[in-house]
Image (cartoon, rainbow, N blue to C red; front, top):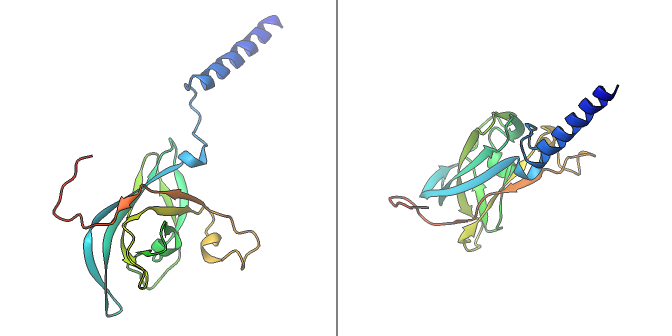
Length: 179
């Protein structure tokens, strides 16, 4: 009986010390460390949408899985820029090319895998273009939350928003940069 107690105490001591010194193999469950968002201005240009030229700044937004296990979240197949991403400034809109069949898609990222979104930052109306911006990603784990607003559904999960680094909105074509 005494040897069983000693074994249990030894095990509990080992488990406690493993957690304290960070040697435990448990998954990081901290929601703030779940993913990392970054954004980079690629260049300046114009796209044609519905026979209208729209000028802006091309941007690459990256979501990196920071976990030791896979994660899943939903995006819209076409309107991901407007449904999943929000700019930090009302004078800027993040645009995607759009398509004919828009619906929720489950994204499955393996441990430490990344997904890249390429879009266009454009000016909203006559508001002057903001020179610095962050992009926030709405991390949505229930596909129904993409399809219904909080007024249309009683229990819409409020998504966690992860923010990117702040970028200066400028033409980065034909330039180099050392970090």
